[in-house]
Every structure is written in C-alpha cells, then in structure tokens.
Length: 158
Image 1 (cartoon, rainbow, N blue to C red):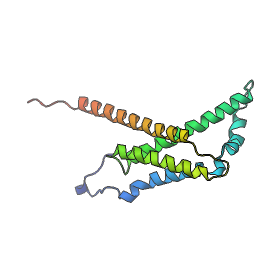
Image 2 (cartoon, rainbow, N blue to C red; image 1 turned 135 degrees about the horizontal axis):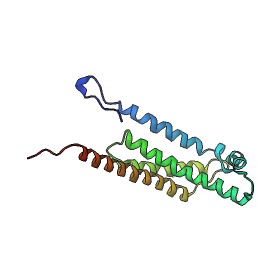
Image 3 (cartoon, rainbow, N blue to C red; image 1 turned 60 degrees about the horizontal axis):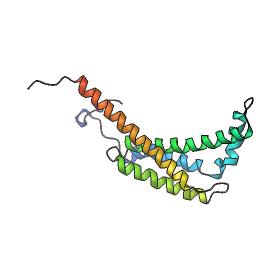
Image 4 (cartoon, rainbow, N blue to C red; image 1 turned 180 degrees about the vertical axis):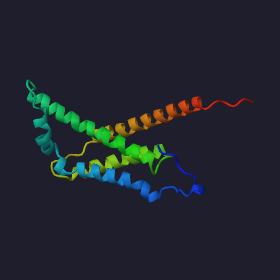
C-alpha cells in the first residue's frame, strides 16, 4: 500500500464518494451476473464445452458447472467485503459484513424475478460465507502485518 501523505504535504483524503466507486462497480457486476443472461442454461453453453475432456461423464460436467457457479458466489462476496473494508468502511468491518449479507439477500430477491433464475437462501448463505472468509482473511493479514512491523521496529529502552 502506498504511503499516505499528511495533509500538510498537500495530499488529502479521498472523497467519501470516490471510495464508493469500486464498491458500486463491483455491486453492479454482481447485479449483472444475477440476470437471466447468466442463468445456468446460458453459462452451460460456455462452461460445458470447456469441460469436455476425454473420459469425463456428462454428470461430471454438470457437477463441475454447478461447483464453478457456487465458487463464483463465494468469490464475488469475498471481493465485495474486501472492497468495503479497504475503502469506505475501513474501520467498520462488522457493518461491511452486514452490508454484504443485505446485498446478498437483495440479489437473490432480484433473481426471483429474472427469467431462468431462482432465489435461494443457500446462495445467500454461500455469499455470506464468502464475505465472512474475506473478513477472517483480512483480519489475519492485518494481524500478521502488525506483528511483523512491531518486530521490525526496535523497542526503546526505558
């Protein structure tokens, strides 16, 4: 992460609205991925041919397709949480996690009205677990950085 200049050096904090831009763009991508254009039938047209390997059964292709779709849920919301805590909710990780869960609920609600899509509380849980994993990962990384930094800085003698 680049060093932040102090206000006296002429640098200023990013505008609060500017911090939301990556979050809004990512949320828009999640919304687009929830449309009928990305229904299982449509993504199968792309994914199934890539999975056709010698000896793989149609059941295995279907399983891999479903697995990839579920992994995408996990990753989408892990990234959403990360963008929130690296931006507008830097000091409010629990609120960021709550926002991810609320967005997952609204996203599944949106899918209930999209042709070829269905709403699933299972997907909300998977989205929430992705955000929670990101929470744990960012917390662990911050803790490791903190420990490394305190070891690198010599303790002053009293």
